[in-house]
Figure (tube, each protein chain N blue to C red):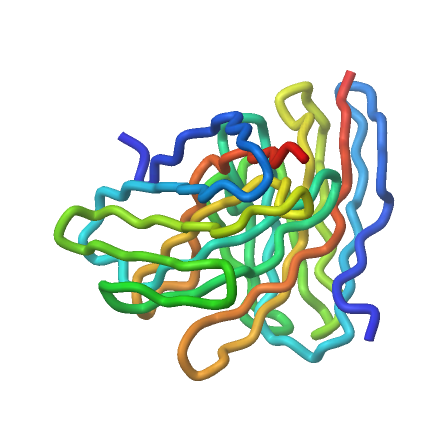
Length: 114
Length: 111
């Protein structure tokens, strides 16, 4: 199992550019989510999906779009990049153990917007 | 007021010391409490999970929850340089989808 994979690992964008951060998992998890991590802010939920075709907003969704056409893939789109979107982005997939939801995180994408 | 508060540190202790990491939370509806460990330039990984007030032990790690004070702790005994990482608490309401994370505490264990 590769677990959760994210591409690219690093990206530099200019203000106004758009791009898609890719996320894939091979654990057949229904639940997937995107977080951003900023110094002093912890992890903040951007969007999440409870299954193919179903997505919902998290805590900080503005400026980001998601779609979920398959169980495996959950791409995050930046529509028009802004310097405030400079961050480390983590994708996660999870399953319900019967007692709690165990999340598995990808290695992250480091994004800089100039 | 943030839902979960965690001292970001950094915290630096000598090898073998007992480490105490803490979070406070504001919403009494929170029922699930987790600790994640994040090594530098890696994604977080689940370290411990607790549901109720009291202590839960796993090797050198003990998670403690005090719901009356809205306070959770992670203790690391006989700390090792390999424990150097950022530790994040995460809390969840039963039935809700999202986890609320603390800011993370950066810990360094010095040999």
